[in-house]
Image (cartoon, rainbow, N blue to C red; front, top):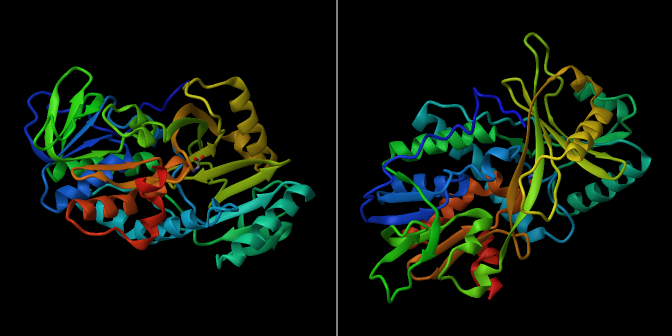
Length: 394
Ligand code: GLY
């Protein structure tokens, strides 16, 4: 549908597509994962080329930017929770370095997430989730309906109760991606517009190399695959990787407060509305993001039903959003993996994969950049990454 022309994706246009010389590292994928890795690798003194057909425009700009290990944690994903906690602990320092390096803001917010339940059945489900989260040692403060409205006065009177998770953060994913791109470019990273078609095998190339769809070959000491769900479509990879990734469609809305209107939210709000989840993520600049649908589909069409359902559920808990300006509805493709966990590690000497971050790409980007920049320097990633190496897919 429409997009705010002032915001766009925040990504700079392609540069130097021809004649990119051999680099220490070539990264397929200019979303937050590939660009964050590129920046950190360049800071370690490596020469880096990033290649992407649309410069990271697939999943990154469609995200909401929740950094929410507590309120995204679900039954059976304890390893992922440990990794998400590591990642969110790292994020503020990473964002501060990024802001220092670029002079740009990332829109990081620290108020936490208020999870609310619309009716009694929703509240029962939220209580079960909260008991599980507390068992895992996560901080979650239960609130009655009045306690919720004390924190967020515009919540509907019908809201039954909720839980405050102060460990959750949020970031403006578009500002963050734009800052990463600027920081990487300032550190010397070269961006090339093109589609990674095939990784050359060691027999074909003395170093790592990627062949692009237009037959150009980019040589490098190490190839890093960070192409989201498209990672599995790159040729020359083991079958375990080829079949590991899939697109998972998400539709999301963006609204904006008209000039002079006070913010309708301070915290990120996650609501359960008659069994369905919806989240509302406020930005300091007046934007409000509402998401998201989740479908096992590969198209990027925005559907009337999704817009209706997201607005209906969001307005059930926050009727005041009817006064906001509707600016955008978009669909993106999350990079799902075989077990919905990220896949980060070495496939063979000179070939690293960093993909499959699914619902947690923005949250895991800083920790992934640390892990992969460390691997490029011969260091072992933090122990929290052990369950998420490519070896588990073989
Ligand atoms: N992380 C939220 C989503 O993927 O919708």
